[in-house]
Each structure stands twice: as C-alpha cells, then as structure tokens.
Length: 213
Image (tube, rainbow, N blue to C red; front, side, top):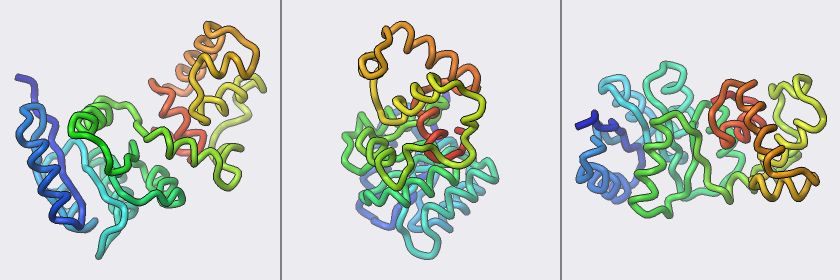
C-alpha cells in the first residue's frame, strides 16, 4: 500500500475538526497526524510531526491562518490548503501570497475534499471557481499582480494569460480571441513550460498574486 497522505487539521471549531478527522482517518489513503485550534498550534503540530498537507482555517484566535500559512511555507513544513466559510477575497489573496496552494469554501462533499487534498499533495494548485472569478473582478486584479513578469510575454500571450485568470475554458478563450482551440492549447502549454509550472490554476494564481506556486 502506498504511503498515506499525512494531514493536519487546523480549525477553531471542534465540530469541524472532528468531522474532517473522521472523514479522513476512515480512508486508508489519509492519516491525520494532528489537530489544532489556532494557527500557533498548527505551526507547532507541523514542526513536531512530518506532514504533507495542512487544512487551514483563515480566521482563528491567537494566530490566524494567514500568518500560520506563511510560517509553515517558509519553513517548508507542509503544503497548505485554506479551508474556510469566509468569502473575504482580500484574505484569499493574502493567504495565496503567503504560499497557500489552494483555497476552498467549506461546502464540499467528503469525496471532493479528499480529491482536493490529493491535488495539493501532487503539486497542483486548486481554487474554487467562484473565488477565482471574484478575484479577477476585484480591485484591478485583472491587470495582474506586481511581480508577474509581463515583459516576458507578447500581447497575445498576455491576452491568453488574462483569459485563463478569468477562469475561461480553452473553448471560451478561442471564441473570445477568435482563435482555434488547438492554438489556445498550444499557447497555454508554451506559457506553462516557460514558467515551469504544470497547471493552469497555478498560472492564474501567479498572475493574480505575483507569487509562484
């Protein structure tokens, strides 16, 4: 049997922590190695126990999830998946800037949650589509964050990147820019290769936050 994905659950709600712990521990693909009621406990748990993914709530006492994410990522303790009921897009952006690999609202089924954890563990960035769309609409974020190397791309490539950040599919991009789907696919493949990233979600997050995955 392959090694289990080791997970820490950080949430100030006993109900949420216990529920997610039960869901994950009954699946042989996962192992909950720790639980935390605030960000400081999450950092301490990650330092004590070898961990693959931390499920991190944003708004917690003592130390919030944004600060805790920054510490965990900086110390290379684990990958972080932000999981919260709050749809504050400024907090989303701050969490992503601090190195979170994804952001999900707490309304997913157990199977969806497990799949997202697997995606994070395997190196993909994940973000709920509604959040990604709202991020692109907020406060000129569609212009791209400071730190994204616009000068390395042609105008057409930037059009493709902006369209990806809007959450458009290849078909929708092709229709918007009057290109074939094959041409759009080739553009995206070349851009991902140039940046050394493997997934279009990572490209969108990089464009929106200026931070590489």
